[in-house]
Amino acid sequence: MLTLAVGDLVRRIRDGVPAALADEPDAVHQLRTSVRRLRNVLAAFRRYLDKDAAAELRSRLKEWGDVLGRARDLEVRTLQADAAAEAAGLDTTARTALLDPLRTAHERAHADAVRWTRSDRGRDLARLLDAWAAEPRLRERASRPAKKAARRAVRRQAERTLDAARELTDLESIHELRKAARRLRHTCEAVTRAPVDLLGRRTKRLGSAGHRLQSLLGEHRDALLLAEHVRAHADGSPRYDAVVGVCHDEALAALADLPAALGELEARARRRC
Image 1: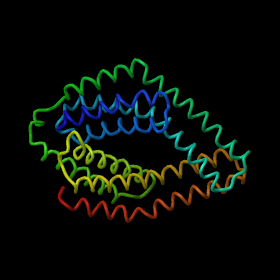
Image 2 (image 1 turned 180 degrees about the horizontal axis):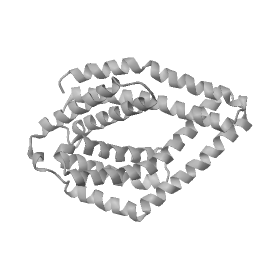
Image 3 (image 1 turned 120 degrees about the vertical axis):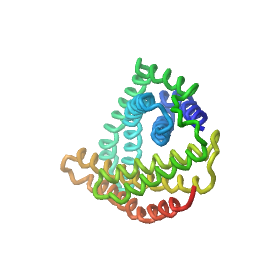
Image 4 (image 1 turned 90 degrees about the vertical axis):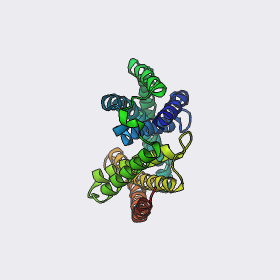
């Protein structure tokens, strides 16, 4: 199971690199997601992997993912700023002044991602990924039944997500819940999709519940970060107040759907995977 899952994720990463480096639409997002999927699968099944080897790979993937993430976040912020400016009725001059610095920053961040990927560190990571795809670094306990291990991993990630939901107090705890929900989703998808296809419909639905929660919290975070950026850009000018208001409305709308999403997750988690 782990050999199939890791090999497939490495293939997805390798296949996604050319389009991401060319900055094709949504390509950086797809590559970043594949990198995160592999990191989360390694974390979810860490008890079956060589501890030091898995930690090294996860650390290298995080470094790459962070570089890709800066480019992706600026791409999203530019699109959201454009939409919020339109919703707020911002005039053309103010809209251009808001968007042009974001577009420039995105171009620089993408160039940084290209440089890192083509650097010695990027090439070293590519070789490490190839080695893991050919032969994952497994522990002796990886000889245990795959279905039992998959169910255990899914159950642990569901419990981790529900524990994080009970600790919601501030923006940092919301961010931790989002990360937990994302790992739950990626764990469920790894064992329900080809080439593994090990667990069934209930696990797929649990993964979908994790995805819904992750998406809502992501929308909340993106809206708040955009509002913060607009306030900083405005430098006290009231002409951007309406844009900030649109951002706050979107953040509140995402939180309004949070109780229902948590309820669905808890209900799905109670059922046997």
